[in-house]
Image (cartoon, rainbow, N blue to C red; front, side, top):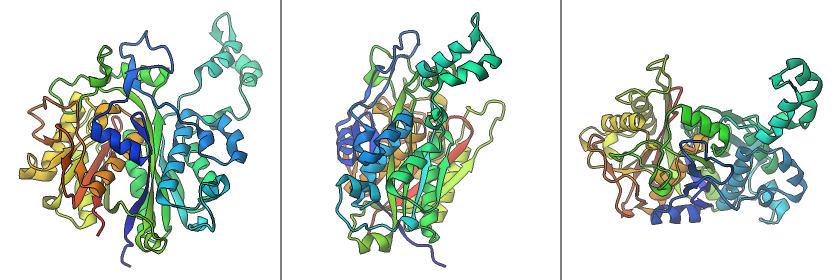
Length: 445
């Protein structure tokens, strides 16, 4: 059986620089940064006090009126995914249960719910600290936590549905309920690689005929004290608090760490003939997917392989899946976020993939204005790559100069570049755990 062709028909980025495909794309072209001093909480006790926050998004603008009560049990990560789903479905011109009930579309529906799947990447959702603190306080005796009092008193200070706010599968749960996706659904929790793995699984689901449409990608919010603490203890964060917009510097010679952020995106993948039958706009085609796990140093799982062994393997698998030789790549979209060892490892992987063309093939990177969006990072990169292919333009990596000469790559740093892109590859890897993924995107023709 010949695999079915899979195309991209809807993009729903939700990021600190823009919400929706148009705003996001314009921000990339203009080199805008969404990194500021953190406002969600007081970061003054932390060495790194900056991050990427999203303002002005409301889940109530993305669900039917009768579903708004459910927003009370949505953590920030879930709300971002629901907003991204609404944006993606609208962008694709789908007529879903949610859009029809809201009046954002007029019937009849143009997607069969039984043939509509969902694959969404999620991260470690942070508990609401004030809410949890009250419960913990009531379970303490003279400042010492008591498991007995937790069972008798502490838990009674939590809402009965409290846990449902923080389960990673709840991103996909709410999205599928709201839009009536009754096809295959899955949640991927593999750090920064989650979105690419989710998109790759959706691609496979459609290609083998199990679904006609899939909503996929990922979202996460790291703009909370627990995430900031974890990243700080890991030594991953830039301390350029006095110059936040220049703090995240992928591939730059003077990079000193990344920045916490929030965001992500969901995309609509669709079987080609299904998309054509409803007259959908097609951004590009997904041509190949590859994944790997690099168990390089189990005692230090956050340390990348110096030569990017696992990432290069994932890329080779994706190229083979697409029936494509690396010599035909016109663009490489990287995940580098300003961490010295990880950026160097990814650069080595790209050099391995491209061989003698490493200094010639343009490299796209959008992390400078976004920081590390966790499980949502890959979806943002994938969306940026799809837009670059569709618009024949590569936006600049505005904080990457002066480039680290050891990288040996052609990172686009000075303004948008016009480029006819036939084939691009988007790379992703988890900062800890060793998961790697790659997706090949082809210009639709």
